[in-house]
Length: 376
Image (cartoon, rainbow, N blue to C red):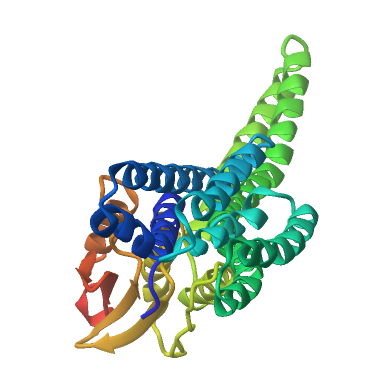
């Protein structure tokens, strides 16, 4: 099972927290030495305050850029972090590990600065950081580590922010796809309704105008026009009912074709099940509605990565089951009318309906419709 995608804020908190743990791991040996072993209160206080300032400002800048709140002022924050990190080994010495502080600002270069500018700054930092390390007296192995570490840290910072934004855009794209599918269906229904009623109502209005003109002169013509108006009105009502019946009546096979395509387009793994050609006609409409509503819930109210659809016959009943791994992101049965309406529809046809989480993050919708022999 693939993990579900959390909300962007949750991912951002995790990214910032993991970054802080990594930076603290770089500086922890030197900080612990100053605090617990050297025993000089002034140096220990300076070390603690400096590290806290660097980590706090680093976390703030990373969070703001993950949330797409980058401003030119953040350059000054990056400069402040670099100044403190480069001053630490100068003030406290390179042992036992303050040289690692020189690598800390590199992770924010490609996060705070535009890409082209970040590439230039990364190149300069790759050269200047080892040179400064040699001036401070760092061992040759540490200097070599910085030559590799500065571009690696800059690239890592850029990639983690880029991946975060990609995930956020995918979530937005899936939500937009769901809204688009609903909007297209509404437009189709509105177009069909307009095509039928527009002509019919216009004809009724013209007949009524004719009847009004002959009201005082020719009562027979008026009766004829009123008869025509009645006939046209009945025809319009019949046409509207046909449209509504065509909109509501559905083929389960057609629904599943469209559903599987929409889910795959939204990045959700789904295989369309094979439908037996012997499936009774009365089964298609109620189970098609179940499939349509359940899929809408998957797209709108979950962060599912897979959806499994199964159709089978058992004991004179025809079953449809739709399961996905989107339970827990948002309640599917939190007072909405969709699933409640499905339950009423299936109950009216003498069938069974159930919906709810079944554990392990899976949400299941199941419906059964009786065969011909059970009063269908």
